[in-house]
Image 1: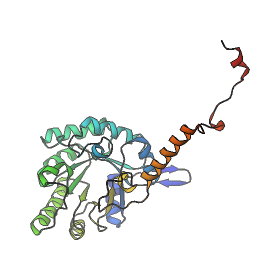
Image 2 (image 1 turned 45 degrees about the horizontal axis):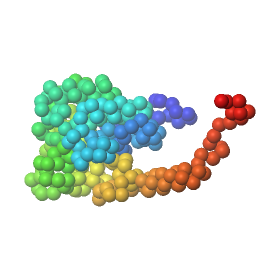
Image 3 (image 1 turned 30 degrees about the vertical axis):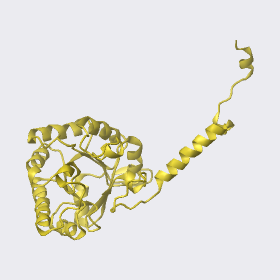
Length: 284
């Protein structure tokens, strides 16, 4: 147990994730991509931080996640690690860092742990990546799987669409969840999956399911923090609840700052430093 003031806070690990599943306790996960945000998420007692390859879109301005590199993920993961003390740190394996071979998957997962200070890695895919999951786990690196809408496959899916609606597709997802569990994954993210199917998967596997657009029947939930704080006026996925209007508050603060600087009211006297002004008279 780690002590913070008068409270005792349990360090979140893959073991505590499994214990939560067994006890029926809901898990919380949020994305973070920098030290400052990670510190706030950690202090809020969130169970896990995901350094998602979504950073390509929300931090780097890409249209999708496909351009994100290993160097991008390592850089942001290491920054988050410096701010997260009790929160489990999971880092995404970016596109083409594991699909090429099992060897590449293990090497790149190792880099995320060694250089990015990740405590677990996440990769997308089902049966086709089970050998990769098994090899990474055998290298003593915990793996979180990711099924349903897998953004790295956006081109193959023909866009961002709900997955598993038909009987064949639903069975395939259920089989994939069982397969990644058997391969050694400690948890599985279910993205944009019908609620009834997500509940079926959750009851069918012994590892925690983390939903995003998959209903309340999952063992936990994950959101991109910029989405849940309404930091983008042009981005509002159906599955996101906006818990605060931070985007509009930030814009209002920026406008107020601009106005006060233009008017000369900032900085005021209380924001300045004093000196013996007789010195000024002696300067030449």
